[in-house]
Length: 503
Image 1 (cartoon, rainbow, N blue to C red):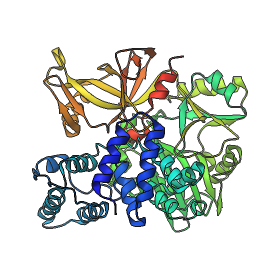
Image 2 (cartoon, rainbow, N blue to C red; image 1 turned 90 degrees about the vertical axis):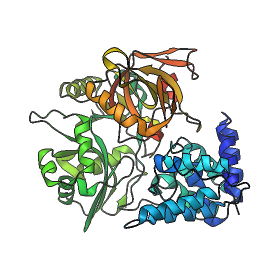
Image 3 (cartoon, rainbow, N blue to C red; image 1 turned 30 degrees about the vertical axis):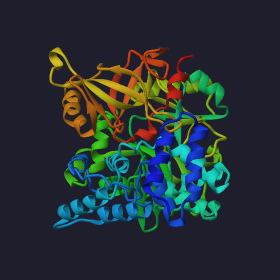
Image 4 (cartoon, one colour; image 1 turned 135 degrees about the horizontal axis):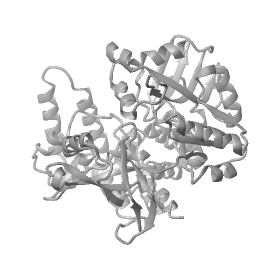
């Protein structure tokens, strides 16, 4: 029976080393000791994502508990899992008092170190997802299973705790397949240095528009349509026009990957924030005021056949059969001249650039490999906001200068790579000043330090070697493009990606 002290100790050991192998060894050793019913909650705790999701206990509630810590450890993984389940299921009249009583009991049984861990876990301070890749390797090592098999099972199930439980109890990972209405983790693209380089590296290739929209994944069966975001959150009720369009497609069953965005009257893309505003809305008037249009670029299943292991060339052919005019603008096997013309047209129409994709590649979900490359005229990075400084002059009273961090691919905290106050509109300054205190983890008279959860897209002119920041690299002429509410810190660019721009 594992105790929470075991979990806290392992978490501290993982956080205290920069060696990926040491992290994997520590996690694998603890996983081997777990009972079958402890595996899923244990993985959730150690990756900062409890299997219950949000349990209705915010930062202010937790720091106001003021329960004296237990003198000796007694909490088990199972007991904490049960307590979180009870919290998540508490609702209705009297739920506030019930939730407070549950929290009092939980924190009253926790030692000082366990209390700190639980606060970080429940407020999202641990929920960076940065340990995800390390945990996958640890599960494979503990289960003596091939890493690719574990990664594929996770890709298709979308749930790391459940995947770990299957692997560590001797289950058949290969039996986890694509399941309609269970979202698949999306395949990601890496930044390309230039169109010419991407065309040289990826041969044969396809090239298509890089839209400034929101990623969607669509599942259709004869009696049901579901639509998910890139974080696998279901938004079906918020996008009825997309549901109607998918119902009318000439296929019985399908799983599609694509983007959606709102267009202005002249056919140009509307601001990204306007598209994202639809994902939390089910109000008919808002739907009528801002219609979304889908552009599909991949097909993972069609009419009873899974395509995820087929090369992109075959998936692209299936996509055209399934969606017709709703396929994203692009070319297959283009000449250099045709590719350059398409890229110029995409920019002229107000889009971000182009995607270049290896036609021989399979769908490798959840991984930012080189098989897909995004080529934009300006380098952009998705970084984590680590803090903000109070402004001066006209910005006095506003949180302004952002501290920016890149994700540590080995599961450590984000690595600071620079600061910027450029590109911030008055509207963004107001939003930051209202929103950032909700993520506060500390601070002083000059700076509010934040839990690493918010992702911001930053445009840069390049990067340079620097001894000022721990990653040894700093951003050049960084400016804010937009915030990315559709992305979690787990999807931020890594410090390796930032360093890769040095060349």
